[in-house]
Amino acid sequence: MVIFLPVLVVDPRMAGIVVVFDFDKTIIDLDSDNWVVDELGATESFNQLLPTMPWNTLMDTMMGELHSRGKTIDDIAEVLKRAPIHPRVVSAITAAHALGCDLRVVSDANLFFIETILKHLGLRDCFTEINTNPSYVDDQGRLRILPYHDFHSSPHGCDRCPPNMCKAYQSIQNCSFFLTSFA
Image (cartoon, helix red, strand yellow):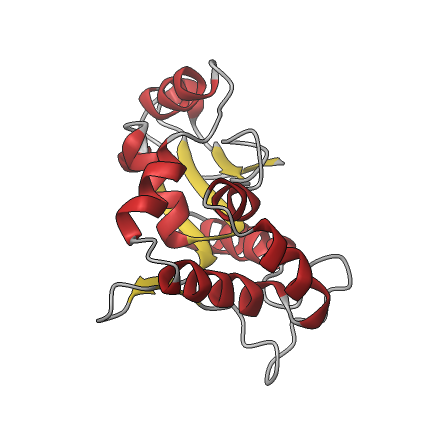
């Protein structure tokens, strides 16, 4: 999914253009969560746990499972770097950035996965903002994945999105920022 929003930019040909990308199945050709789990051999555990917990809790649990199997953060990063992508995605993103478009990501993936792939492709600096589920590597070297919204205390009220992140809300927030900042 790609959403266009207004913004003030230097290049007059691209004035007012913000391009908001989803990540999974848009910038890369697949779901990054499933890719990592499958490539690191944890599909069976994933499928057993899938009906028992919310997605972010499941992915955090799977990162713990992979860690307990001896998989490192470097192993995860190497899998991410092999994620398939359409051959024109990199050139499209770099061209839009070069023309002055403000590029952003709104995704239900997680920050480590997204930044690892964007850095590998040489695209991280093309994006001014990434709105996604936070993640970090703890002191044991295990990747932790958290929900963007705390879905237990403050539901966002959208029935189209998963409870942890409303992409429509994030897009509206981006639009509202530009409408008030540059009006």
